[in-house]
Amino acid sequence: MIAFLWACLERFDDPADTVDTRPIYRLTALDLYDIPEARDRILRLLAGSEAALRFDELLPGPDQQTAQPPTTLRLRSAWSSTFVASLELARQGDVALAQEANFDPIVVSVSSSDQLQPDFSSMSSAFS
Image 1 (spheres, rainbow, N blue to C red):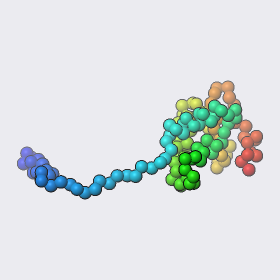
Image 2 (cartoon, rainbow, N blue to C red; image 1 turned 90 degrees about the vertical axis):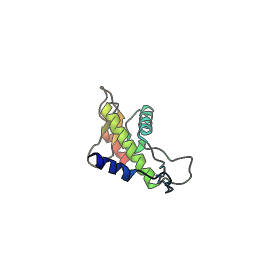
Image 3 (cartoon, rainbow, N blue to C red; image 1 turned 180 degrees about the vertical axis):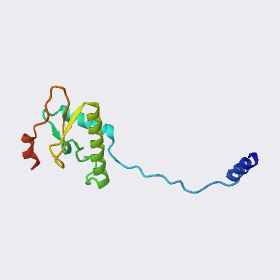
Image 4 (cartoon, rainbow, N blue to C red; image 1 turned 60 degrees about the vertical axis):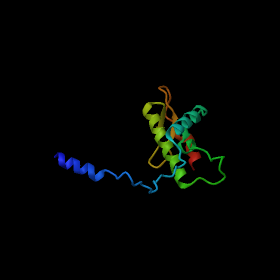
């Protein structure tokens, strides 16, 4: 057994005179939205609104720093980070999520014990 371990060490031991000059692969940094940023945005927008907001109203606005339209990856990042943040806030009891029927818009409202569910009848004209 000891001979086997010494053989393994010898096999993986690099000679001292050779230097590995191969380039190291580095992932490119992606400019994506993160969940804490989305969580803060949701709470800030809900605090400034008296009524419940549709999920798409909680998405980040266009970047003022770049004049180019956002990439598909950045749009997906905005949707997914906002969705995960809203689920986390709902799990913690900070917001309430509601959806009238399958494939209808998700409505996000501030959660409180005395608050009723959002009134979908007043919002239906906004979805048309």
